[in-house]
Image 1: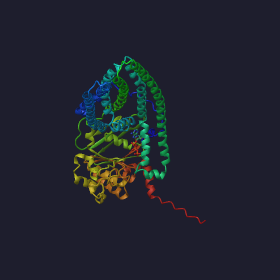
Image 2: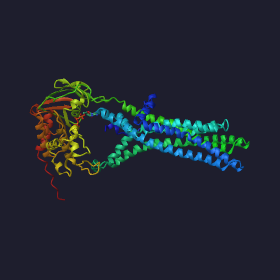
Image 3: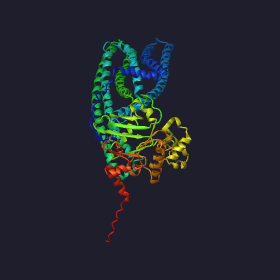
Image 4: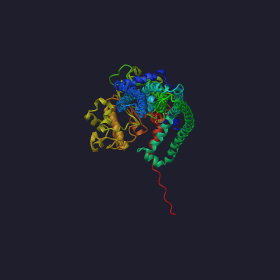
Length: 618
Ligand SMILES: Nc1ncnc2c1ncn2[C@@H]1O[C@H](COP(=O)(O)OP(=O)(O)OP(=O)(O)O)[C@@H](O)[C@H]1O
């Protein structure tokens, strides 16, 4: 996490680009249709049929009431009443049947949609460059897209079909109500608007608030995760910074809370005003109807259509308008998703395919600046390394050692200068084909919560079943402890899942070394390979490394000069610039920075330990 991410909660300005585009609705519907055409059709058909049922129910209900009123005067047979009742029962049965099919279609469509959109997001994420992951904005987009994938696209489809259904209901029920008087329907429709306007307005505000909070919520989550992490608990307890973390976590909460309270208060006030206005309008419509009733112009059945129709129209108008705002909100999410899916991919297969071992690597005046930053972290770096040589990169923290490795392994491209492989410009070749010739152990290597075998063979997935290969790599990395694990190579590792074995830092590091050895590569990169190893393991690792290095090009980054001195060629970096280069003895003879650092470390071993102060008798 970069320091700028750790800041106090602040007012975040709305993203000016957060607007849906005209094509988003169609594109969303296309995604829904493609996920499952059959269930989309089934959902649409059952929803639309259901939308016509309220009017049919109202009408049959009205007929039934009128007949009952007639029956009181002895004008209607029991048979006629039963016929109407059977219609009403039929409508109820049809309603439940449609709703059963509709729910089934919705669940299956939702599942297919979640799968297909998640798949797109994961596909996209796996094609993104390392650079995109290091960009907070892209990372926020990815997180939000992935978090809401289960609800949003389906939401758009359901709401759109719901809108069409609402039109069907409104037209049919509206036609029944309109028969009761000219002003009745407009008044009933008008009465539904204030409430819907309020819920729409605050729904959008709520969504925007959540979206602006995404970044801060991520920081707050991170702070919470520090307090609940099993790996960090020791450090957190020892340094005792729990209160600090809790305070920061709470500061973020209070920031969110302030925004929420503001929205909730305003919404309550507007909501109250809206319901008063609605009640007035409905009162007016009722007075008009009652005047006609008093004049004997409408039947009991008609009056029931009015009373039940009000609720129906209000519910439908509210559903209709909140459907529109729901579509708008969901489309804002979809815009976020589309923006994420439209991010430029880094096509790792673009370019010629590199094949065969790499014999020489040459950096020519290589410079580099991380995207969105304004500082060159490498400047005019030159060196050549050939097969059989081990090259060590030395320098203080932040000097640019890991960045050189990122360029060498094509995770990033130089901003100036070039890298030659066997004398050919590396950019001609696809990053993936070049990476195939490289194997690496990073400083922050992966601890995969998988089996021992997967942890090693994942370096070359097409050889996942190569058990002898895995065993050889494990031997070479000195990870014999694997033999003592309950299920040897098949023992699940890590604490995340049940039955997993947790390893020590050094044991994990040996496994990462085995992973490096497992891949048959001509360039090996060791970024702090012995940091977590004990003295014997470090010695063995360096021996193995020397053995391996004969046939290969080896890059070594280490702060331990006992390791560095074994390299054939050493490059000293300072602030992204190569300040010294040569073999260990040459650099010592030069008596420059390398010699100073080496002697500093060597004196740490050679000097007499300070004599402990003798306790003074009191
Ligand atoms: N993703 C990034 N975005 C912006 N700047 C970065 C990024 N990664 C590293 N840097 C900066 O680049 C410079 C070189 O970093 P690099 O990781 O290469 O140093 P290093 O020599 O490997 O350090 P260490 O010995 O601590 O591992 C540092 O100033 C660092 O802050």
